[in-house]
Every structure is written in C-alpha cells, then in structure tokens.
Image 1 (tube, helix red, strand yellow):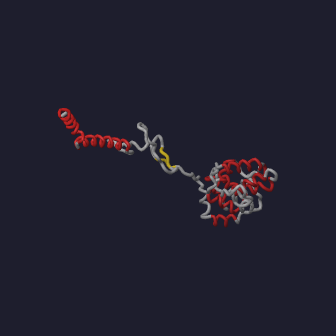
Image 2 (tube, helix red, strand yellow; image 1 turned 90 degrees about the horizontal axis):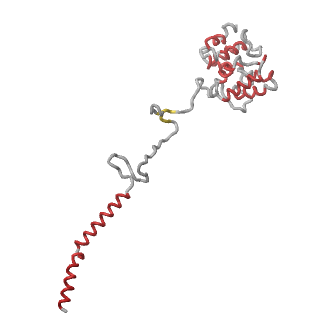
Image 3 (cartoon, helix red, strand yellow; image 1 turned 180 degrees about the vertical axis):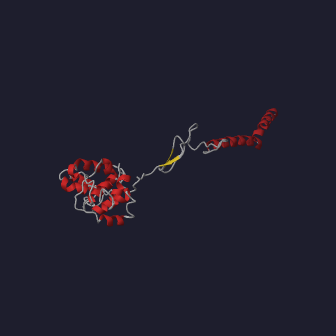
Length: 254
C-alpha cells in the first residue's frame, strides 16, 4: 500500500510544473501573439513602404479613380494641361448668340423666303446674319421692340402680307420692331463704331436723313435714310467700303 502511495505522489510531482505560472505565461504569450496578428491584419488604411495605401475596402491590385470637382476644367489628353470650358461669347458681345445662332438662322431664312422682290430687306444672307448678331435677341413672343424676336415674328407674318410686315422685319424696324434711328444706331455702334462718337450723336445725325422713302435692299444710292441703312447692312460683310457711306456727307448717300 505504501509503495502505491509513493507512485501516485511521484506522478503528481511530474505534472506539477504545468500548473505553475511558467506554464501559464507560455500559453498567454502565444495568445497575445495571435491577437496582435489578427489586429494588424484587420486594421484598414495601413501604409506600405512605398507610400501606397491599402486596406479600407480596396482590393489588392486595383487603383482608386481620382476624384475631381467642378465641371469647368478638363485635362487635355495630349498636353496634360487643364483646359477651362465655359459659355463662349461672340465678337459682338450682344447676347444674341451671334449670327450663326439658331434664332438668327431661323430669322434670316424666314425673311429671305417671305420678303422678296420689292420687299427684299437684305442683299445677302451674310448681311442678314451680320445684322442679327448685333441686335438684342428678345423673345419669340415679341411683336414689337428692337429685337430679333420681333423681327422673326413679322418675317413669318410677311408670308401673308409682305407689304406690311417685311419692313417691320427688316433691319430698321420701321417704328414697330424699333424706331428706324434707334435700330440704325444700335447696328452702327457695333458694325461701324468710328462713324459717331456715341449713339446719341448717331441718333442726332440720323434725324436729319430724309425718311420718306420706304426701305428695301435696292436703295443703294440717294440722300436719304434708306440708302444709309442699306450700306449699313452691307458693312457687316465689308466695313471698309460701306461704313463711310452711312454718314451724312459720304457718297453715294448724299
């Protein structure tokens, strides 16, 4: 019996080191290492040695797209330079959209189609577009006032009554789409800016031009308003030749 007891005591002594703190410390160290490894792997946004950022939901091997703000700048694919885009303004700066705008194209097509023969208002489509480019645009609802919208309305109405409406749709406006001198000086300020110092001076001079002759595009000579208005429209294509003719002392309008 004593021998059996001693054997059990010996076995207990062999197991005893694993119960001591040294055994527990070893297990604890292994647990700490596992926890640290898991924490490191789960941390997003870690930075590698080359300065690149990984983690945060980005898959390995993919490059995040750059984020840009604003819509006014793009990068030229050839030069790499930033190119700014915006609303372009024509050389006339009138806000009408320029002679090639949809409104001017529609206006000039209507007046060319409905105002012909003795009611012709422009010598060419180029002259019409040039005048349209420097007039206030107005709105399609305009039936009066010195605007492209008013002239477009009357150019359309001229299909039924060209004698009445063509002169209203023309460059002068004939007191409906602007007064003759108002329209004349608006156009002259843009097309022949050296003719008068300002619009007031232009309107004073215009008031002395004989107004009796009804304007049409055949009025190429004569000491009257109609002749000067014709040469003003022609100046949109050739200002060097025609701008001198719009004044009170220049042939052939004298």
